[in-house]
Every structure is written in structure tokens, then in C-alpha cells.
Amino acid sequence: MTSKNDILFARAQTTTPGGVNSPVRAFRSVGGTPRFITRADGPWFWDADDKRYIDYIGSWGPAIVGHAHPEVIRAVQEAAARGLSFGAPTEGEIVMAEEICRILPSVEQVRLVSSGTEAAMSALRLARGATGRDKIIKFEGCYHGHADSLLVKAGSGLLTFGNPTSAGVPEDFAKHTLVLDYNDPQQLEDVFARMGSQIACVIVEPVAGNMNLVRATPEFLQAMRRLCSQHGAVLIFDEVMCGFRVGLTGAQGMYDIRPDLTVLGKVIGGGLPVAAFGGRKDMMNFLAPMGPVYQAGTLSGNPVAVAAGMSTLKLIQQPGFYESLATQTAKLARGLSDAAAAAGVSFCADAVGGMFGLYFGAEVPGSFKEIMACDKEKFNRFFHAMLDLGVYLAPSAFEAGFVSAAHDDEVIDATIGAARKAFAQIA
Ligand code: PMP
Image (cartoon, rainbow, N blue to C red; front, side, top):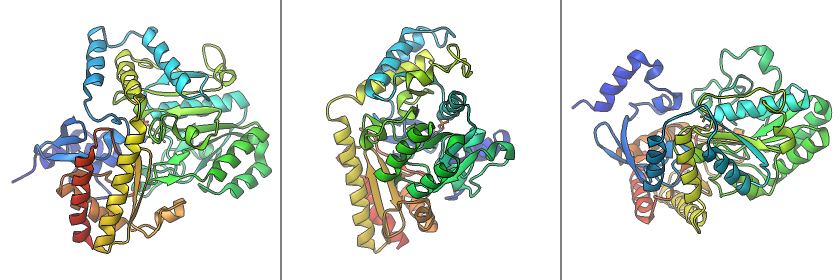
């Protein structure tokens, strides 16, 4: 019997490049047919054949309270009934900005946008505009969306498809992007010593999730903070993924480091398009209409999206939310590691808050090089074995996974049970 997913994928490829609207969805690196999703509820979603999966991507991060949470859906419905978009300010945007500034002490002012790409691109322009400098530092394997300057040795889909620097980025742009090794403070030190006065900013995923999960060492982030302050460069934490995910106050809370600017997305939209960038007020004042750095958006602060985001921000502040999320995620990581050990597969897992990494190698990687040394083919086989058993992992060895508050003990145990079979199959 032909799967409806196959039929839809064939049809999609006629009018959509590669059949998908974002590359990693296409299953290119793991092979096979992408699943077309029809509905989702809590920790599950269903494909076009009505097969149910335990979902570990959660829309790549936003679905932290579980899919279709009744309170989020209600907030969206109520907002939608009042009108979809006005192109004029609303009180909801103030409430959301106040909430973000209250939760993240480093953020004194914030501007709402519609995607992480837009937020990172805008933060970069702001850093350049505020410092009058052109050069930026990023790290190999970190992904900050697809703005030209940031598509150099990037992670996520670019890494998955083996061309980490995109075609179409002019050399004149790329030459201003200095790409350094993640978790190498000495290299950072050397570059600042050589050209510190030309560097507008350092942008980093303080917990990296776009080359699989890699934790920053405290020394790396501390060196970054110190060097930026010494040389008048702007420190930008891209917390699109780890913000409100590794804990309520994100990586900046976890490492106790105050960036100058923070980039947010995913969770703050609760599944609708909201992202943001914010930070020091003196710097945010460079933005139009106050200052000379231009940035704008027809749908920025969209009332329906803001309603989804605000109801999500309320839910994640319930007592014990992150303790429970971290417990479930750690339980998953431990259970998967034990299942692999029982099957004799070289594998390990790591978890930070509600994020996890799966590595087909003996030790948890601490660098891009170590990630690249993991067994990608084994991952691909494991991915498909799990998919057949009704567990949907990220379809790439270079992505992190996400647990939601709806992943209860029963769901985690079912996942570990499936993993025992999957590891045995690929051993
Ligand atoms: N920064 C980081 C750290 C991300 O993980 C992502 C998306 N995965 C982005 C930026 C880009 O966000 P968006 O896909 O919403 O444009």
C-alpha cells in the first residue's frame, strides 16, 4: 500500500523546492520520505497515514508546554476573534516586552520580530551601527538564521547537507565574518589581541544546539564577556534555542553571564511567529525611530502570535516547571544511554534543561571537531528504527532534541522501550 506521505511528498516537489519549506524537513540526510503532519496533541503528532509518533522536535523548540495546549489555543482563538493584525501598536506587545525584561535582567528593552533569522540579523546590524565597526565573530557549527553575514560555516541544515557556507553570500560580506572554534578561549584571545578595535560583536549560541547539542564551557563564555568589554565589542547571546529552554532565564542565567544583546525566538512565540532581540537600553536606543539603525516589520508584534507567546510564557513560570522538564529530559538521556549499552552500541547522550543531544560515540562531544567524529550512519539507522517504532527524532545527526512538559513518565518509558529495540536492530 502506498503511504499518503509518499503521495504528498511527490506532489509537494512539483510546486515547492525539494517539497519542503525548510530544508531539514526533507529527510535528505537520513533518507526516506518526510512525514506530513496532520495534527498534534501534547507529546504526540500524527502523520498523513494517521500513524502516531512521540515528538522530540516540538516544532524545533517552541512546543515546550506540549502541542495544542488548551490555554495557548484559547488565547489564540480569543485574540484571533478580535482581528488578526493592525499595523499599529497594541497593549499585548507592552505586556510581552515587560515580561521578557522582567525574566531576563540583561534585557532592558526589547523589540519583537517574526523569526529568529530576523532577530539575529537585526541584532547584528544594531551591533555594527552602535560600534561603527564591520567585523563580527561567530563560531563554527553555530547557526543564527540565514542572514548573509551569518551563513558562514554555520550549523543546522547547512551542516546536515554538507555545505556549511551558503552559495549566494557575497565574498564582500563573508570577509567581515571571522569564524572561530567553539570552546576555544585562547583563539578568541588571539583574535582580539590582533584586531580587537575592528570587532563589532561576538555572536554565540551559549548552549549550542545546531551542531547537535554542545555545552559551552564557562571559561569560554567568561573569556568572551571579558574580551568584548575590554575591546568595546558587543556580546550577543543567541538564545533562540536555549532561551526559556535550558531554564527560565536561559543560558545567561545558567552561566551567570550578562550579554549586551540577546536574541530570542521559538518558545516566546509558543508555536506562532514571534522572535525578539533586546538588551542594554543605551544600545537599543540606536534603533529607529530613536536612532539611525533601521529595522521594521509589517507583522512584528502580531497580536495573535503575541497571545500564543504570552500564554506560553505564563505556563513556563508555573512552580516546578523547569525542574520537571529537566528531570524528564535527563531520564530520557540516561534511559537511551543504558539501552545502547545493553545492546553494545557506542553511544552517549546529554541533557541541559529541556534540550538533549544524542551522540554515536563514546563520550559527550565538547567541540565541533568531536561532533564531526560521531558515527552519522549509525544515527541515520537509529533514526529510522525509532521512526518505525513511532518515535520522531530530529532527522539529522546535527540537531538537538526537545522534550516538552507533556512528556510524562509513560511517554519517556515508551521511548526508552522503543530505543532498546532500535539499538538491538542497529548493533
Ligand atoms: N538562532 C538559533 C540559535 C536557532 O536555533 C535558529 C533556528 N533553529 C535561528 C537562530 C533562526 O530562527 P528562525 O528559524 O526562526 O529564523
